[in-house]
Length: 179
Image: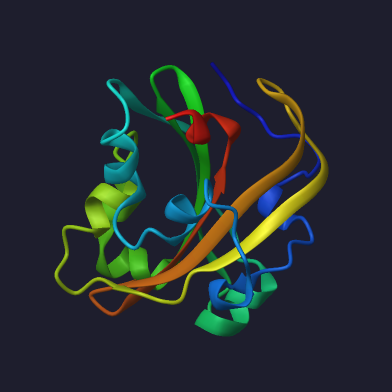
């Protein structure tokens, strides 16, 4: 099943999200454990369902968003969009950005296919995670499988593995709150 997000030519993360440090927000109780979890989201999801799968929506080289070009001092990278499914329910739409230098030093990241990124990076003792930032995405996002959504919570974190940077952004779909 193909799961394309409308409303933007690139992804939901290109919307004008207001990312905030979690210390600045009062989060709903149902959302907090998902947004603030420090471990692997894949492992957290797997512990709540019988059947887990990753759907690779898109993976391709492209120009990095301007804020990443400035931060990483690189022009291009790999953008990877996936959906994490639990018990036939779409639970998380995730997007990762990996600069070219990270892929040169950690080539297996360019060949993950249907393997979750989290399963790979959380195996490394050198893994460091930056602060978790959250955003409330609003105003009628159109999701083909789920239809219009009024509000979706998202988080993002910068990671470093073997001193190589990457960015992971995750949107929590309604299915995750039914687990």
